Image 1: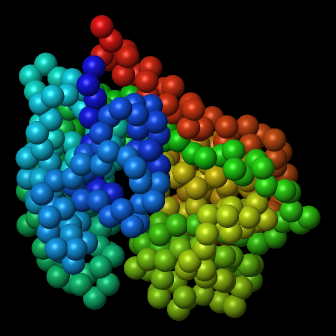
Image 2: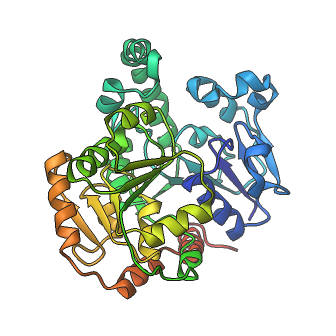
Length: 368
């Protein structure tokens, strides 16, 4: 069985790209097709068989703007010639599921979510698109562009034979927006590297890690910890960075650029990890558990797949400063068993992901 793996774009590393690497480890002979590829930003993909669309031929200055032109990506993926493959495994939160297949071939889509700004989170994106001074223009354009995008995205989903979602929240969205059933396989997390870190003498302060964008609601944590006069360190950058700095008190620290090792050590030394947004899954929550650090999580989305209430996390149920403050107080008054945190994290290893993926594909497409 000849297999091709297709991914939306390869321009920066994230959870989807780590999942893609695990897919390739499961099927090392499969080439990886993608819309555009920036090898300078993707050292882990060096030496792999990466094949791009015609978008790669654009000048680099234009190539970097590819995310603004979804219709071009649809055309680019449809132009790929994948007729030699029996199975197409797409890794998608955008347009890669638009690829065409030969008659009799199968298309399995590992879906990170139906496109958020078309479907589940359209209202939030229209309210705050995250484009800074261009927000006004984007708000005016979205009502005209999104219906067209939804039409293309729904049509592409109907050509997928089998969906796999990264969480039960995503499974529900696939059923609701695409009217398709989906299996759930959680994405892989490199938990072992946290187990090897030495235990800190004392844990203190709170931590957040990730892109500082509106839907992650980092503003709630900054406001709550400022009000409580508690130390909070935010690792990352994004469109919300300037606003977060503006509302932050003296106990809030920002680190824009940090190595994975620095972040891992910070997770290990923290009293708690704050996760106030609704995520499709939320890999960094698993990393926090692997570091022996409990989580304060908004009880929606992927957090419900990851945590056992009051065992690995304190949940809060409204995205308000007051609800988060109450949850912080609960965590400070609660004792967590570090071994149970690590045990929960061990459910999301790369090995588990690969075995689950291979088993699912064998079930859907028996080898002959």
